[in-house]
Length: 210
Image (cartoon, rainbow, N blue to C red; front, side, top):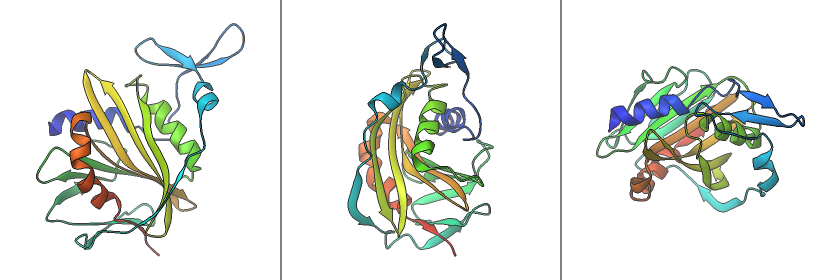
């Protein structure tokens, strides 16, 4: 299972600065072209976009998350419980800085860091459009802004299918003048709800380092 999801994440978590294949119809309308031969109008999602809600709850790191893992690229770190999570410098995905694995289960994580600042709304669109290059049915099933340890983060849950595997991403997106971070957990769709408590414990360790 680990090897399958590691490969899957490498395919989907592409560097945010990479472009999407685009085309133009005879009427001059821009379209996005996918590797499986499908396409969609570039502004299709914008036509149905709704205001992203803000969760009124204040999220804080779990009391058992005592180990601080620091990024070497941006001023961000994550408090985690080393008894529950294993972590290492990313090797399966060259775009990521760290990868994580729940020691007892099929829940995985990845932290991707970049120097460029990107508005959260734009970050959402890029993540969705880029992911659809390999999972054309990728869609957002949950989105909200959160206050996590004093930071404004965007929570996204994305569901999709690739190579017959139904997967879910559940994670935080963050950007400021210091850079951009995708901090994401992922597993199969049928397992996500049972793993959400552990996913939340890891994700809510996200902090800014002075």
